[in-house]
Length: 435
Ligand SMILES: NC(=O)c1ccc[n+]([C@@H]2O[C@H](COP(=O)([O-])OP(=O)(O)OC[C@H]3O[C@@H](n4cnc5c(N)ncnc54)[C@H](O)[C@@H]3O)[C@@H](O)[C@H]2O)c1
Image (tube, rainbow, N blue to C red; front, side, top):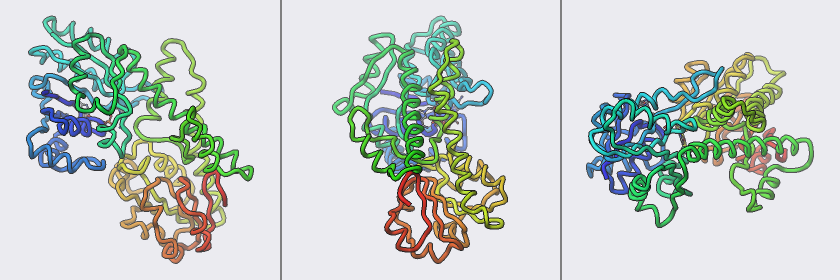
């Protein structure tokens, strides 16, 4: 099939690469010309495992190419997948911004030269596909099309793997023709996954509900970790204990510095804000949002408490990305924690194996970016682990013990081995665990 993808970010690019690998002819459009140029040269624009390899392979076999002409992308495709961003731009309203979606919808309406299926992959307010359908009909009376909701559930850091092995594909469709096209699009994957066809508004809501539920799990386990810290219970054992109940499931039960990223914070806030437009309160979701903001503050206070007797303390921050496996720093807990710490006369030396450049776009030169993991520890009074990178699990503690001024580690991801840390005489704290 000829597939057009509009938006080549963390969702659009892996989707385009995956569909090309499945054998479709893919043309990706993005308004960011420098991104388009880089991608056409085979240079990957974000860190995502296996994406570089897939890009080169599919450019070579001419199954994928990139353009800054959205019109060209629409005209030359049978299926158009919209994957542009829907960030929150106004913190007072907290609704996701649909302007890029409707910008693309308007352009699509004017370029519909024959029947096309338009699939909205971006996370959009419930009712967006219905509104888009009316708008297209109003702008182009002759338009022959179906519009479907096709939300994305990939995990950043595993986007390529998740494309080929989705737990399920959700498709909000209104016609049997659209159903057939979506089935054909994903046919090569249907021996290992299923498509759940639902109505469009259900599909749009499933995306918000799924992310909000996972956010609840994260907030819940952090609350239980706080309880562990007041008792002799160990959160790692408690998580294992409750997670092995199949009704609960073990994922998203790792305590930490709070959830972040471009999705959970935005989608929980948007869900509560959407409910508000129907005069509906969502007290559970609102509590989770508030607790998650408080969590980052709690961690900052805990770090400051550890260095309160040191003048101008130096803090080594390990990890800037919101999770391991990505260079994405959007709403990363590390960013909020660093912002809070910087209000208190500290200096920060940070290291992240992939996210230093994306972080620099947010924090600029307010902190030092260490070139190597070990550079970050030099003369530090405390080291704080904020992202669960594999590299940090294997670091040479003996070497670190010689580099730090005070041998003090706060492990906010519970990734270090307590015995090894104790062997080198560190003062060590983790979240809700043994000290
Ligand atoms: N990042 C994730 O893990 C994830 C997972 C599931 C769903 N989502 C949802 O998918 C959507 C995209 O997220 P993302 O993280 O890929 O965003 P992103 O910011 O990484 O990428 C969006 C891309 O769209 C391009 N763009 C914006 N407006 C455009 C326009 N009018 N025409 C052409 N290109 C345009 C931007 O230049 C950018 O390259 C959002 O709605 C998000 O909530 C994201």
